[in-house]
Length: 299
Image (tube, rainbow, N blue to C red; front, side, top):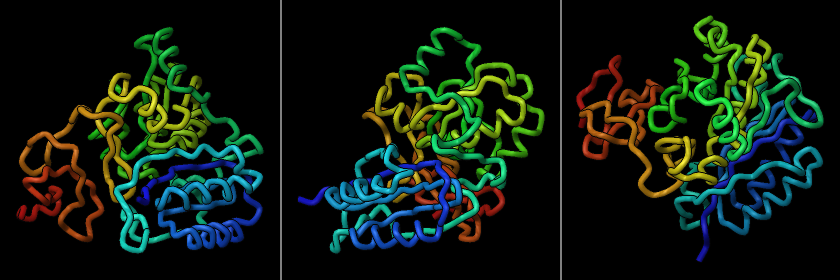
């Protein structure tokens, strides 16, 4: 029986010809029957793809043949399934694009990369090293969420600062606003889903006067694999594919409530207004939900 898998990955390295890399990745995925989203820039590569297990193993091996990507950290997770054509049901199509940034912070010139990745970024912490830091420094340690605020509604590190941002593009203004000046000399641990957003954010924070910045190596995914529901992470993880939400172990805490009826839920939904891009929480009983600006009747 065919097994469905999803790979999440990124790498920072100088890319001399992003368009050539785009064409190669597109042809590789199409030939293997994979779907997903891949972004390429002059300084890196970021993707999430899904498909049949054996095809995914070939994709991983072939991608690592590119010299700059030989040490890329591929994170595996279970897919929902395959359709009648053997394609991942978690992604509607394959998208491979070249962009100025692999994460849209709106500051491409802030990023410097070399052969070893991002220059001037935060210190990487493995999950057990994060616990060591917390054991040694206690309440002095500040967790700083590097994701959109709606993602943190269903899962976050205990006591984390959740910046008031709807998209990554809002982060620069947020960290320059002055509202976090009181933590600039504290040990700040940035985190995100798979590590790419917090790796870039950690470098941007250091450039703006944060003196002791760390990042969760491999992101929440690697931490959750190590500790499940028994560590410092609480709740569920928002993911950008057809699954919407994933848990690291049965019985994950439900942290938030339905925006329509107020019942506990971790189920994500789009606003009923098709032109609105807000992500909301909606329980199965309600089915759909509207944001305050588009206060439509729930059906």
